[in-house]
Structures are given as structure tokens and as C-alpha cells.
Image 1 (tube, helix red, strand yellow):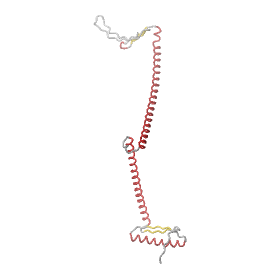
Image 2 (cartoon, rainbow, N blue to C red; image 1 turned 135 degrees about the horizontal axis):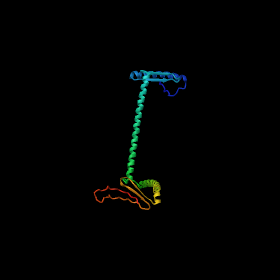
Image 3 (cartoon, rainbow, N blue to C red; image 1 turned 90 degrees about the vertical axis):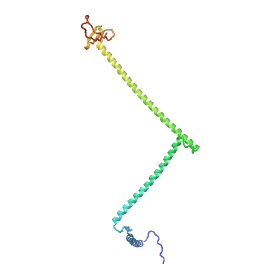
Image 4 (spheres, rainbow, N blue to C red; image 1 turned 45 degrees about the horizontal axis):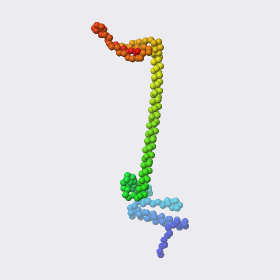
Length: 239
């Protein structure tokens, strides 16, 4: 009598489902033991029933099997990640090489080289690109020149203001000098008197009204008999 194939799907009848679970669980446990013994394999089996009951088998110990499983799974995951990372960087390198090749080819074309393979449309696009680049360069240059001119104007105005301030200070100093001069010589000039003062080392200051000021250097006086010579005297006269 030929045994018919069982359709692999959920058994709706609860009793039949429980009986099938018990039979197949026992067979699975037997196969796991045989595999561990015959092939010297480390086997761990964990089964939960539909009611939540646990059935397990381990050829050594369940803890060691689980630790080995975690370690192996982590190593496999690292290998997969490294492989995927290598593939990713390989694709990135290929993409960058292609971009570099395109940029070098575009640069040569912009320099007027390797134009034989271009069509009329490509040449027109290249010409428009060069004109746009040239326009941008000229605009940038004009902007830089304008900025430099504005900066020079600002510096010129600053120097002009500093010059005006210095000019005002010079005028103020001149006025103060004139006032001091009037205070010092005002009385003698009004009375028309002659003021003479001597200072050290033979210098002499002579003030006389309404007379231009000049310097005089007196020569050394000599006696008539030329036996005894007087020491030179330096006189500063203001006339």
C-alpha cells in the first residue's frame, strides 16, 4: 500500500495537531542525537510547542552551544559587513576614476585640445560654456577692482581728515606762540625801550623796538700793545 503525501500546512484539528507534534518532535530529537554521535557534531535543538512548552536537546551543553552560535554568527556578520564594505569602496573608486577621467577630458577640451571627436552641437556648447566662464571672471575682476577703489577712497578721506586735524593743531600752536610773544615782549615794544640780558658763555640777547632781529658774533678783542689777548666772547644780539 503506497503512502500518500501529506500537504505541509497547519493542521486545523487540535487533537491531530498535538499527536503530529509529539511524533515529529520525538523523531527530530532522535535525528539530532544520531547526527551528534555519528558525525561528531555539536548539536543544539530548541523546540517550543503551541502551548509554550519548551523541549530542548544539546550534545554537550545548551549554554556552550548558544555561545558558540553567537560567536559564529558575529564572525559571519563581520565577514559579510567587510565584504559589503569592500564592494562599496570598490564601486566608489570606480566612480571616482570615471569622474576624474571626465574632468580631465573636459579640461583638455576647454584648453582647445582633442576637439576632433566633437560634433557641431558639442562645439557650440563648449563655446557657450567658455563665454559664460569668461563673463563670470570679468565680473569678479570688476568687483575686486571696485572694492579696491572704494577702500582707497576711504583711506584717502581718512588721511585728509587727519591732515585737517594736524593743520588745526598747527594753527592753534601758532596762535599760542603769538600770544606768548605778545605777553613776553609786549611791554618793551610799547615803551620803545632797549632790553639787554646776558646769558652764560658770552651770549647776549638784545631787544630793541621796531628793529629786525638778527644774530651777531663778536670777534675777540685785542689790547693795543698785543701783549695780553682777551678771551673771545660770543654775543647774540637781537636788534
